Amino acid sequence: MSEEVSAEILTTHILDLAAEGKRLDGRGPDEYRPVSVEPGFVATADGSALVRIGDTCVLAGIKLEPGKPFPDTPNAGVLTTNAELIPLSSPTFEPGPPQPGAIEVSRVVDRAIRAAETIDLTRLCVTPGEKSWVCYVDIHVLDHSGNLIDAASLAAVSALAHATVPAKRFEIAEADYPLEVNHYPVECTFVRLGDAIVVDPTFDEERAAQGRITVATDEAGRVVAMQKGLVGAFSPDDVKDVVRRAFRHGERHRALAKGGGA
Amino acid sequence: MGNVGAKDVPELLSPEGLRIDGRKLDELRPIKIQVGPLHNADGSAFVEWGQNKVMAAVYGPREVHPRHLQQNNKAVIQCKYNMAAFAVDERKRPGLDRRSQEISKVIGEAFESVVFAEEYPRTSIDIYIEVLQANAGTRCAGLVAASVALADAGIPMVDLLPAVAVGKVAGKIALDLKKEEDNFGEADLPMALVPQSGRFVLLQMEGHMNEEELGRALDLGVAGCRAIYEKMKEALRERYSTGPVGGSA
Image 1 (cartoon, rainbow over the protein chains, first blue to last red):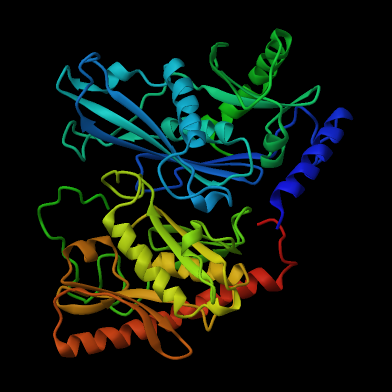
Image 2: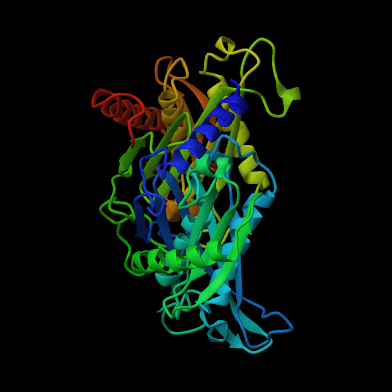
């Protein structure tokens, strides 16, 4: 069918609604869709979490393996974040190597986890320069209905928060132990729809958006990462506004990352 | 669980003839089928089968990508089986490998054998199978999930496709192997059955069986497939008799 034409009509409608302070699904401009976190979804992973934000569904899995530290950081473990926008999750994704969209998601998620010092990487070092843990964060998008960054980062942080270091299995220690998580960064994404800046965009809102901005905050009151995306612009006041809002939403989602639930 | 690096073969069959998880030789692992869990897909299904967790989605009939694969007299059926990096004990490198390409091919061909593809010329029916947690038998679980997802998408088919693996464990023919039995067993024989015709549209085998054992294994597999067939129909009935199509899952 003529997907482009219907998208165009929908975009106009979304922008018209936004001008009246309304949204297609009846939410207010600063309202998230229902958010839920299910830790431990995958038993084969060393940590995992299934996150739903409305119809968006993302699964993150952690795997820890012994490896070699990078030569420039001999005393630190390695953290690797990878997002797969698999074609199962959206009619617009095709099989093949990661597209820029997937790479952006994994990099933005990775940046917040790294900058917040979520994990003390030096604690993942076993023998300096020789042996350290490699922590893989693999993000699997199952249903893409918008706002992948928030769902992916919430899933990743929650999976880390519930991860176990498989030290016994790899004969590095006598027993497995919980992965130490020091900070809980939470990403919060907004899009511009005309003069309105709304939180937690749906797929259609992202397509209509005139700019997207993500702010990652942690429990210590720090902004740890930001990313502006899509075509569009934000003023300094816009940015200050979304940072304030991101802290408020962050607190709620942090509790979910720690404890799971909805 | 977690037998990485295990040097010793675990005892797969107890003196009482029970298997490592307490099952009898002809007993299936518990199966749970959820119809339509995904919002974007035209049809979807989530299957929890023992310790397997598999999601399947169907898109189409829709335009063919890449275009040159298009067929003027029927729909092309494109199947992609993929495994999440964290689905197995040793992290799997993400992306296509030879194993998943082969599985994608044989599953796709199984569905080509039952879907009325000639109803939709110049289109593609895309089947995506994602293994989220693996514990032996993922291609069968994927097939079952994909078959239910095709039905959920409203694609006309000869029949649903139940599938199961039969193997040989400690010298005995056993239904529906779990990981330890698959790793340390003597044979693995996955199959998919068209219940209406009683014929196989997927059949693979690896290991050692004699003629008599193979015969029994096939019979056991057919019985297993028929039991799974009932579960598939039950799941679809439950989904479509309680409310209108397209409600939130």
